[in-house]
Length: 513
Image 1 (tube, rainbow, N blue to C red):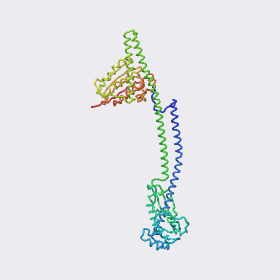
Image 2: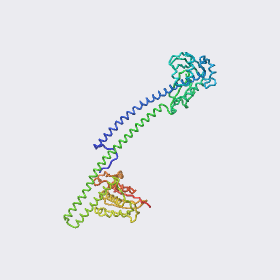
Image 3: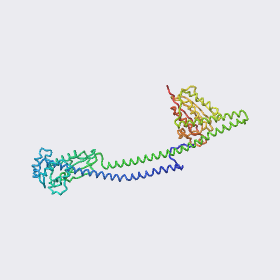
Image 4: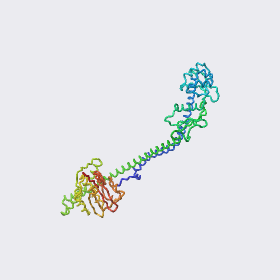
């Protein structure tokens, strides 16, 4: 039987080629899609960068418009305080006097009303529309206004029915007024979810008058020069709070590439595992078929010998009593061989089905090993082996399954017998050391390559050496020994080299108390 490989298939098997084609049909489209995705990321990144800059520019545009409306709402509030009569006169001193003591004190150099409708209508509009932004938007008319002096802002007023009433003209008085207006807007009215944006407002000469967070390096990405008369000359600057737009786009692109790479890696890993598992199962299925063929041969040979010699004895064709005894020994040896093979198969079947049970009981290991040796001594010596046994009279009792332990020793003995050639020497030694009982079975047979020391304990595995394949076997013996050792909390190890024989050591722990 062949070893079960762990690497990828060679493709020489038609089934392996079919599997490879199937997996390639899945993997290649995925790779092509990934390549297209990677190539499209820079384009999407550029589009995202453009969209973010446009978003920032829109924010500044609407910030300017809202700031302008804030200024107009203050002008309307001031107009209500001053009154219609003083507004129509437009005397700056009287306006300042009327605003003195209010929160708008000193804010306006100019505040006057140009009427095109009865004064009563104007008073009603001023009285009902102060501070109301939604209605204020309706009040802003699209009709052409006569231009006022430079620096004055204008607010057209209309009645609810759409009638043109007049124009309110105003001009902020000093830089401090600008600061108060800007601060009031950005602290109360500016929409900045999660404080993601940092905004600075500066004078025309670059002197900052307000900013939502400090920016020592003046790293701003979007700028806007405001043009409305009430805020003319002020400059708006904006940036991301944590990182730049370019950094944000780069982070997005890296995240997308990492995600695509991770998906490809997982897909490739999954396909590789599927490929390996399918190939392994196919090889395992073939090995099981070989196992059945080998076991059938193993069963047929002793059965044929037993039948042949039994018929010879039954028909009385034995020339002498000595010959009859020889036939009886052959029948007995082949019966033991059959029994051992069948026991191995049954135990393996129970282990595979999860029904194998061990009956643990205090056991004298010396007695178990001696019984196995005595039962097989004649067979071993008949085949020309020199048997050496070193078993001390007293050893600690172990909690083990006596039958399973005996079977493990038998399997190790059979293994030594099968793979010995010219040097037919077997040594069995038992000793207690470091809290463990060690059962050693050593031979001077063909030996095992170091690379296969762990593999020989796998089910169905047989070394690739041609000398091994010349010897029939099921590939279950050492697998059962390993399972028995682990079930008892122990282990089995091998020391071997090609041409230098093998030493198998079964370790069983001594349980105190």
